[in-house]
Image: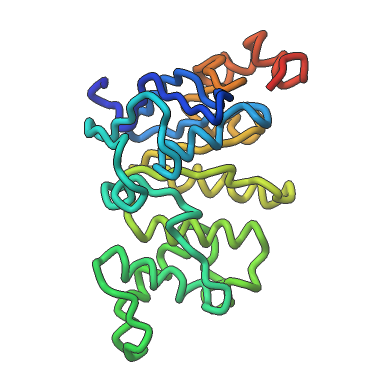
Length: 251
């Protein structure tokens, strides 16, 4: 691993009953960068992501995080190391307010148990930080709103706030704009850009336009293999990438 590499894979492969979903993927994510893993539907992005976050075991290959081999670890173990997948770690409780959701995540980050029976006064020690995190993701005005009443885009922003409460060394976002309106997509892209300072972010995406101007490095997968890697200008002009996105390559 290079000195500034925070996450790296070597020969990462996953087979399902003879079908190779991810094939010999070498990935290197620089600390402090926004790195996108993109590709057409069926390219192997989610399978790769699930292996990185330990929800799938690789058939072959290794995964190293901050120089440590995490290939055989469990999801909770890698989360404690600081590799946090937003929607899996930051559960949103629909009947609790946005503030209460973030406050629960702050309790967990500080090693406190989820003491639902504690007095409101005791729990308010987390309020200032929780309000700050809601402000960071553009939800300051929604602090008292039950999470279940938030729009889909705002609910995803709340999930990111609860992830930030865990103070991860690296955030992994799995298609954070999937199913969103154009307005919500723009809001989440702006949010990721806003929270990037001092953080490393790896995001899975299928839409090149979402990562344009946002990501430092883009790795393109197709048929489970790395097709191209570089900045947006280089990968968007790559002939095989163009072919894959136009449907002339089987993704």
